Length: 105
Image (cartoon, rainbow, N blue to C red; front, side):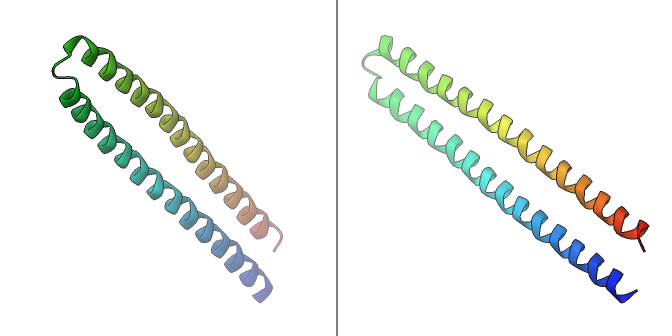
């Protein structure tokens, strides 16, 4: 019985460690996304100020910035999906291993 308890504790510790690692990755992702939004806003403000005397170039420059931001947003959404899939996969694997452990007692 103590061997089963040790195996279960080891499995739970492994699961907690993996969840903490995913949480850390997700937190870093949110910081990166926030920074990107702030940088884009500042860059748009700077571009607007720089091109204020040449309005026909302003539209093209800001349009390009917003297109780049949209591309980045698409990549970030794909990353969010991959992170969610990884969390789901890990939870399923944890439950399966836990069930296998309980079944073989």
